[in-house]
Figure 1 (tube, rainbow, N blue to C red):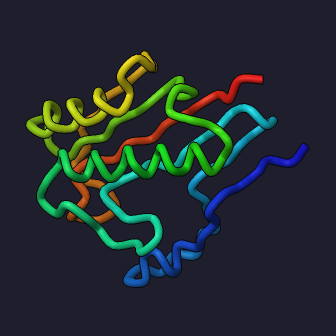
Figure 2 (cartoon, one colour; figure 1 turned 180 degrees about the horizontal axis):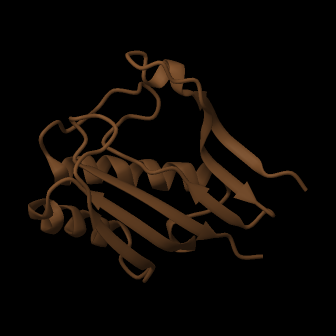
Length: 137
């Protein structure tokens, strides 16, 4: 069985100011059950517009909405998430971001890792959240 790839794109369009040419996607479903989601940020997936500029909690809200939507498209749901990783550009954003994530994942109990990084791919992005899910048989 081939892996299923959802929302494919090329970085030439995503980052036109850079000389990149990478074929990527938002989600890979492997073996029909393992779901790997690309790190989600404060960006509308349909328009590529950055949202909630300067608001880490607002960006986390968009990232979690993206994760929920992508999981549905892949045949899963938030309850299927097993692991999340949260990247923050400033440790002071932790409370605002984790409150949002906690609301979205109430009762899910995933394994979680939080990392503070010096920057994300665009300067306006303050938080990035990626997830791994397993869709039950």
